[in-house]
Image (cartoon, rainbow, N blue to C red):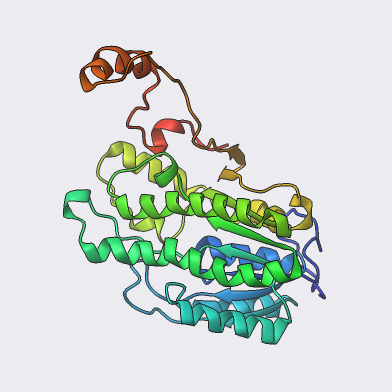
Length: 316
């Protein structure tokens, strides 16, 4: 790849993705756009996928994938636009056919496509639930499942999936989004376990960044307003270096992990493990559980925390 003079906006190594082909979903705007630009900057050929829908996934708003491709090409990179709907398996199959036809192979996938339909749970409609699950969780499965065949045949590949602290920790009014994002973390771990024998890696990123999707979150109180202002200071470009690292050969021994990225902070997130145990020689009954087990376990119960409760300090 020939990088034209002046394309030095990010303080990263140049060329660590040279000769790699990276497919990025939801890459027309926000975090995905920065992923696409950064991958191209580091030498990759990029399939820029974006359905072009609004944040709710209901209306098509232009062709953002094509705009990103123009940006990459203007700077000397190689990219191809695709507007496939990741929630449609047949559409995803065609996206991979396009990638292989034009670039000859596929080395890495970044599952970033997503929509938001936030509602307090007792007001959430079936359509709100299904639409978010379809794009985030089913979309990540569709793309990963087809990529898995290519990765298995070449005995090498990398997945990066976007999860969220809304699922890992919790948030109000996002049951659909949180369920999908926590499901993606489990999907990533399962892929890592099943495909390790083929030298295929699978990891998650939970990003903190101001994007058009985050901009749809309703401000309900002063603390929420302050949190939104903090988010505005965190640009999507801050997430890109972690994605570049995870799809590169620098991360060949990293798989099955969840990283949160918040401005200049990187967190390794915990995964479910036993905290405490209790047993008795005779059988448990509901009454004995209430009298004996719960008092012993309760000191390690999790509170109903949200992300802002876990990260109350300003981003570094």
